[in-house]
Every structure is written in C-alpha cells, then in structure tokens.
Image 1: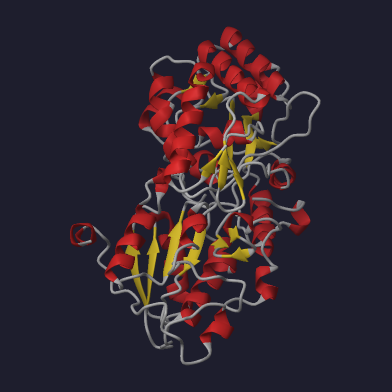
Image 2: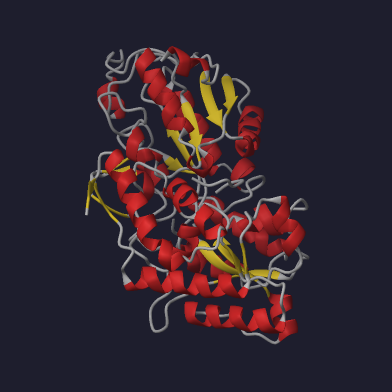
Length: 458
C-alpha cells in the first residue's frame, strides 16, 4: 500500500494501546514446502484451525521483510539465537506493487516454495491471502495464538485482517491520520490551528496570500485518498461482506473534499511532490506549516535527519479535522501486517517470531519508528515520545484521540486503492486537471479494478 518506514484505532493514551518465467523472477528462498492438504501428525486441524503440514520443530523458517523491518529481524535473532531464520528482503508490497500476491500465486502453481512469515505494508492483503482452495494466510485466532495475547492488541487494530469473522494476521503498527502542524510557525504567523476542513481551506488561502511558498499539505503520494477522502468520510472504498464493492464520486463529502483540495492546489499551498522525494525537501523544507498525514510521519519525516528534520519542540500532531458541525474522523495510511503461512512446517517458530516483532519492547519500543499496534508497547512508545520532548506537549493525547476516530466506512478490498489513484488520478492532477473533474474517472477506475478482482460492483 504505502512506502513508509513502518506504517487502526486506539483507546485513550493510558490504555493505548496498527510459472517458470515468473518463478525465475521470484525471491530465491529455501522456504517451507509441502501441500496444505497434508494432515499434521499432531491433530493440527484442531490445534490450529486448518490442516497444517507435518511439523518439524527444528526446521528453519523463511521470513520475508522489507528493508525497514530488518531491525525487527536483527532484534529477534539477538534475543533468540537458537531459532533459525532464512531472511529475504522484498519491497513489502509498497505503493500497491502486488509483489506479495504475485509471488505467492507462482508458488501455488509450483506447489512449493512458500515462505513461513511475510511482512506486508498492505492491510488489504488479508482479503486475498485468506481465500482460495489453499489459502496462504493461517488464521491466528483458531489456536495458533492464545486469545489472551490477541486481546492485547489495541481495540480495532486487527479489524483490517479479519475476514468473515476470522483473523488472518497481526498488525505491526497503527497509522491513523492526524493534522500535523508546525506550532512555532503558527505562533509566529499569528494563526490558530484549524479544527475543521472549512477552516483548513480558509487557512490555506490566507497563507497563500500572506506567506507565499509555505504549504499546508501534500497531494503527490499514492496514499493521498486515505489522508483526505478517508479522513473526510467520502464513500469511495466501501466493501460489504467479502464480495461487494461500491464507490460514490457524487456523494456530497466526496465532492466537498475534492473542492477543498482544488482550491488549495490552485492557491499553491499543496505540495505536488512525494514527501519522500528530493524535490519535496528542496522546495518545502522549513516551509511546512501543516501536513495532514499518518502518525508515522513522526519518525519518517520530522525526526529524520535525511528528511524534514524538524527542530525539537516545533511540531505537533493535531486531532483529525471534521466537517463543520460534524464529528472528526481519521483516515489510516498503512500500519504494516505480519502473516504466517498455512504451509509452514514450523508454526511454533513462526508464532514465536510474530509474538516478538509485534509486542516485544526490544523492537516495538526501543527501535520501531511508528506507533505499535500492541497496546502495552504503544503505551511505552508514547511515553518515550513524551520523555523525549521532541513534539509539543499535546502530541501524546492527540495521537491517542486520533486513533479512536478512524472512520469505519473505508474498506479493505482485494486490490490497492493507492495503485488505482496513482494510475488514474495522480498524472492528470499533476497535468493541471481538477480533482472535481477527475472524480468520475477515479470512480470508474476503482469499479473496473473491483470487477477485475471478482467483486459485485454497485
């Protein structure tokens, strides 16, 4: 889904808790083998909720991670030297590349080669990985993990991985959107941080006149719809059950958000570059007044010497914006996911690995750049942020509040919303087209993609 270093919903902070030609291009792995229809020798159907292959507790496990998750692997290996890992690095499905699904489908055709554990940046991967005659993803709530452990995840964190009532993975981190702003600049300019989308638009218009060159947002990344349209409660990604999809570009909130962005874009206060691009830094470093976006911008941008590298005490995360007279809502940009393979011959080692990387302080608190999905680790991570005094004093409370506000009207289909946006909208927007005029194009592209993925579209 998203290119992020660690990319859902929290309670308040105290309880906080996110084939040959084809095969030739795949990862070269020494992975678990065997067919998922082989019954385990230990009553594995009852033990795990699926027909596991015969288990070998001495077998190494093959783990796929993106480069940003390598510290998690390193921390696990240091803490568990007796567990043998074969580690392969891939793109994590970033920006909706589909690499995870493509590789697994090729292994399905070959009948072998599956990894034991996979990290993905795409929460919607559970929608396909849980399906088929031989699903890849193992259910985690049918015996593989104790309910007491699963209950430790922040309320709602596992919802994106729940298909027909069964949970098929574990969240790595939470990624609610917040209204990031530079408090020092707000004070210097004499502005009051906006709390509504209407105030946000008005502020941007004022900034364009009084402080040209400063920006209040960015629309150059593929996750733009999750920041603005999800946060604005636009019904452009609605999934009902397992097989129904709808998108409504004529909905008043969809149109209103497009109008807000068009106005700000015309005023020149929205960056059109990706926030991870050199061009973004060259043009906008030191001139970011506001930047609505996910909580993981904290480490990815503001506390990153290679990015915006904000001065301590200048940045904070405001609560999500609302429409005038309505309750605020947050979007969600990522929050990585860990999957265990149903084909694994060493499920206990895979379980031990997932338990560590999702909940152990040695990774989630000490090393992870984003807000942990496991509530106990989240509490400590936020406390660590507070002690560092890098962000202003309301950061912890506002992040906790934002995480309770993720709008549940945005679904997790079997395809990447981001990929559709990047292909259908981003080039036209960069070419000068208005978002309002592009809404029908976006809706059509989404529905075509949904139909191609087997959804009934309305």
